[in-house]
Length: 473
Image (tube, rainbow, N blue to C red; front, side):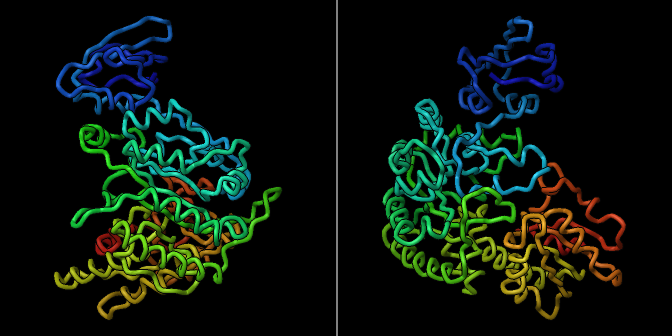
């Protein structure tokens, strides 16, 4: 059932008098567990009947136009996700420093959030009921953390007692028409080399070839996840297309290096991915991509940008990333932004509307490397103002954590205060440093970071960076 936390908006509030503790229990006689059920079962051509139970036990029945379902979803309590029972040796949640917000320490293992937001799940807690619901409601695509298809290796890496064959579960989902994106967190000494090769072989065997002229599947930036809170109008369009022919299969394999913070007291000793191993994996994956393109029609396996930056090797062509389906894993992000910005600047030059404001960019050390290596040649054209890039040391997590999205407000502010007071700068931060609540990992707002210093602090854009820069004047 779904908890109601406020009255319906006008004029729908006239349908019934909301009271704290009210719950929607059934839609057209069917039990409702959450908002996905509500959308899935909601008819399009007739009146919808909602059964509501008050805290007092009183039962109500109201009727509404199915088109109004989207209007009332803001009155529902957010879905509470199921937590993870695994104890992965590399879990970054366990590496957070103490004293942060409670939500930072919660481990998510919920197939619904995998479908809605692209969260990765291990499938270790997916029972028969959850499996059947995924299939019945076609909750596709899903995002699955595989790490290794070798059963013994995966069991040890996930810290679980019950052994099970993740490939068999994936096969069941694929045969039912579910698209799946997979992930490997590469941990030296655990799942590289022959283990990684087996993982690739097992997963690519579940891939579905594309025919000539057919797209492998829809790009993740346009379809698949990224819904904001309870604002899910797109989901109605997703379930409306359930009559389409299901086209399941493992669609991609992302490989990312293990992240190790300075807060690993009492945890399993792990080694970082070093440049030498990164170079080996790049060569290995290049061969696999060529094989996959021949067999499937697309690259299938993709490395996160860190590998190419660590190994000082060039990024593959943007076309290698196909639809950038693993962009939220920072896979292909650098190449896509580089090419997108270059094209946007060419257009701006033709229109005589190039940016005119000098910028100072504060970002993580790895991102700063990407800026200097990949973005600087695009942004250093003679008709553009200068762009200064300042790498921020991560004292919050430790200097081994170099990505922009894990910078704390305190580290950003410390670096900001080292900038000379003159000239006054327009200082741009990655939009990834501030969450949807407007705070950093350590609870600081943009105003907190910029207090009592002369520079103008701004959250930047990624794909729309050139438009953002133009508007600064």
